[in-house]
Image (cartoon, rainbow, N blue to C red; front, side):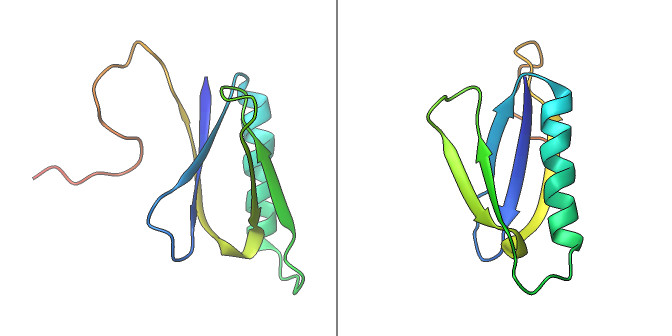
Amino acid sequence: MYSLEISLRYSPFPLSIQKKEYEDIKRIYDEIKDSMNSDNQNSPLIELSCEKVQDKLITVLAKEVISVQIYEKSAVAGGSKRPGFSLDI
């Protein structure tokens, strides 16, 4: 299972969806990245659906996305460490 997590401007909590196939999540990642790079004044809406929670739908305004990341969510990994960067002191 692969997760795609997006962070929105002025929102402290990320939004995430899960897909079974890497190709599906990578396609969505590329679509969001292209929308973020666009200089279009009319920012498109991005609609996301989740395979883990069937009725979960998220729609966001592309210009409000400030970061996006993909990570593999496996049951074997264990632990409570979140993906991304962390500072261990």
